[in-house]
Amino acid sequence: MSIRERLSGNEAVATAMRQIDPDVFAAFPITPSTEIPQYFAQYVADGRVGTEYVTVESEHSSMSTCVGAAAAGARAVTATSSCGLALMYEMLYVAASARLPITLACVNRTLTGPININNDHSDSMGARDAGWIQLYAENNQEAYDNFLQAMRIAETPDVRLPIMICQDGFITSHAVENILLESDEDVKRFVGEYRPEHALIGRDTPLAVGPYDTCPFCMEHKVMLAEAMKNAKRAVLDVAADFERSFGRKYGFFEEYRLSDAEVALVLIGSTAGTAKACVDALRAQGVRAGLLKLRVFRPFPAEELAAALSGVKAVAVMDKSEGNSACGGPLFAEVSAACYELERRPKLIDVVYGLAGRDCTTADIERVFRRLLRIAETGETGARYVHMGQRSNREEAL
Amino acid sequence: MSVSAKDINEQTPWQLLTPGGEIYEGGTARLTLTGQWRSDRPVWDPAACKQCLLCVPFCPDSSIPVTDKRRADFDYDHCKGCGICWKVCPFQAIRMEKEGRP
Ligand code: SF4
Ligand code: SF4
Image 1 (cartoon, each protein chain N blue to C red):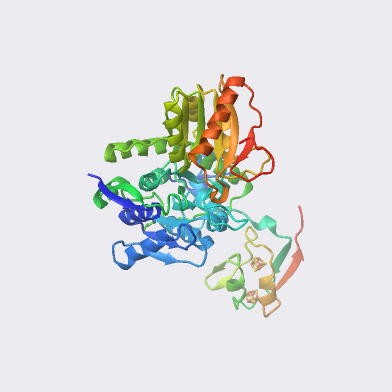
Image 2: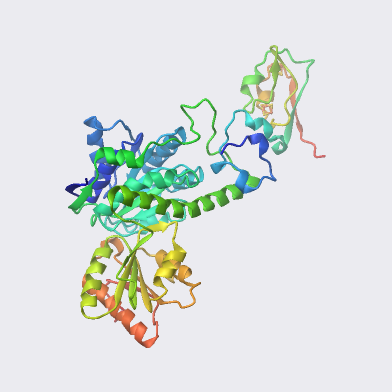
């Protein structure tokens, strides 16, 4: 039986961590993820977990601690945001290339600069090619549920990749909402024990991790990592299926909201889905066939499945909550466009960059995007494909 | 999956390598001949050598083999030619030469 509670996203993730009772927590504070190590420190002080709580001097060190701990055969976790994730950058690649299934709670905050503490996805999007699995949450429940599934995905023998469990800073991390928790015993049973085949300690056989990789071998190891990321697609679905059997809540690569007969649709990530669903419902009540695809899994990117889900839609707006600074759109737009390229009948696609550094996005904003899509569907004219929404301007903007 | 370092070489396909290049046994550096990097070569003069063994712990590459408390000639498969042994030898029993190219 699930337990009714009301928790912030940060407390939900800290609760998941307490229930899992990992071997090592490498802790360094940064807004808005600070509460996670803060709650966890209390669990350690109260003797509620057996975790080795390592306070370090920087995020580079917290990820290094996780790398060492995971190589030793431990379950290692950490939490961070924004520049904290950026400071880990070097070690993120080390963790992935050494194939260490570390779990990182990423509370998304805009990446400095300019310095700003509010939410967008520029921090984790900046690390999208690091070889980490990335799961995103709409709300506290999904952040909690994703965290419970994280280790089993990451530790799958033919995956062995680190995983980032992302939630929107403040909007999700600090807002207190209703949530269903599972009992400590059920969580422990679901997550299970970590028994890696090789480890630096506790074994009779020796192991060397992360050796210098000479030219004749390094590309082969990168190919192995790329294959592991493909394998992660199956692992994500397998673990989600077992999660549904255990706890009744259903997950996949993405959520399709009133999408099956939609004429116009949005693709987006994270908490804006709540706002978008309200807008979809309002438009549906007016007879507009609006729909939404909320992406949960960004790495591995479910290209074929996403393209199939969008194949019947006439016009799609990809909502990027981070800039690509590519002069042609954000990272989500690039992936969605590439995914749809193989379709016989492609939807018209535009990119709407929104919500940067915490800029609000209301149902009225979302409706403007849908109205634009309806015009595109009607006229067949895409117009500007890469636009920003929510900024002040002294000229008329596309949105 | 467990693969011995001796079973891996430059012809091994990626499917048969270890994840992350992990190595599951000790002492495998012996299998990798790194001496080609050397541009200078230490040359040992056994007649001048007093077998004090001071050079041995100074060698960063364990390239001065010792058996029965006596050093033998350099392990040129792994010596990098750094010259530390030459510098520390109190008896001028080591000299440095330019590495010849065959
Ligand atoms: S330091 Fe010189 S004298 Fe001593 S063992 Fe080495 S080569 Fe011989
Ligand atoms: S030259 Fe350097 S690497 Fe070679 S034997 Fe002497 S100390 Fe060792």
